[in-house]
Length: 316
Image (tube, rainbow, N blue to C red; front, side, top):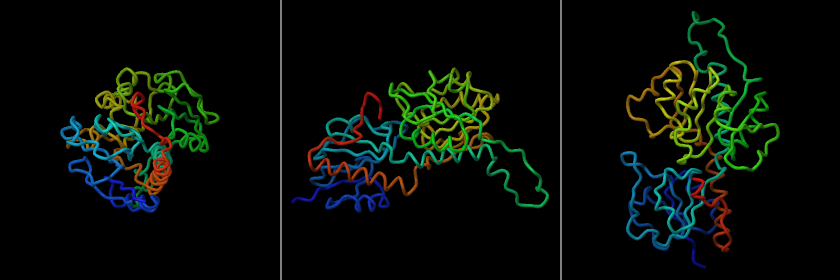
């Protein structure tokens, strides 16, 4: 039987894990961005996010696309880092749920760091030995903007530490986690929450949903955490809210664009904690993605429908 050829744009660290789960498939590393033709007879492409030249994704597909590719596996849940033409032809599947635990833990770490004033309470000399006022997270309210795999992982972890969890959700499906209250809209969620985690995809509907109008309803002293996409936030509006105290802290693992330009106010703002989109870089993310890929690989070989197929109308 002819061996299946999988072209992967991921680093060797990922490809080695994929190879362990892919059976007799050949994993061949290729450069990101489809800047060169794929290997002959590559029927599967594992696609990394495209780099945006000047903030714009390539508008035209390379000559010959989609080559022999019949299935594209994304390394992310969101599709905003990929050009439209990638979704023309082959079926495209996302990495839905593969990084949910990593993202949930990162969000909880941000909440605890804010309440316990980490790292500023660490001392390095005797004259700084003085108790510092801290906050409890027990009894506070966590608002989740979007409730999918991340929400399902984060909500019980927050509840275990005594937080009340409320959420908005685009889908009409009921929230499956016991004790999580669904609220009617974003403004209600912002008005009631002490900590808000953005866990929604970047779509035309969610672009700059955290803007001046929404932040005007925020509970004073809000802690805003973004582990989703930078495009959900209007940066100018957030900076204004940080200056007037409406937002006390912004913990941002994602921005728009990435990386931010030199001199952006987020780099030096005293109430912004900025990290370089690093929350998903854990071993379990690689293993989960490889495991899900292997499961879909078995479906692909047998001709069965693939799981986690991207729905362009939803944006993920």
